Image (tube, rainbow, N blue to C red; front, top):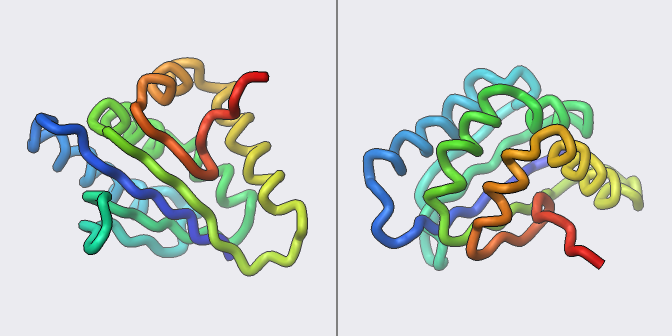
Length: 137
């Protein structure tokens, strides 16, 4: 089982209507991506982040299905331009010592298939975690 977490700090001055549209798009991912077993989207409390979302998958195949699904791509296009800070993380009960490397490989393949996404991510002021672009060099 994989719990894929997303933490979002909205840019100052972001259009509240667009923010709500992006948050609804996160909900749509949970409702429409077959690999998502369960999800939650909501406001964060007690942190510097405004919103959080967790999507649960059975395995890495489900993680990949999530990454390349059109509903996920739509959320990326809507949400990334509104973010000041973005953090992702993964929690798993998988005992595979190479789990983190396998997630990194999925993320790398995802970016290789979507150059527009790479450009969007490069413009983020702060992005850390499992889906962060690898540093050059």
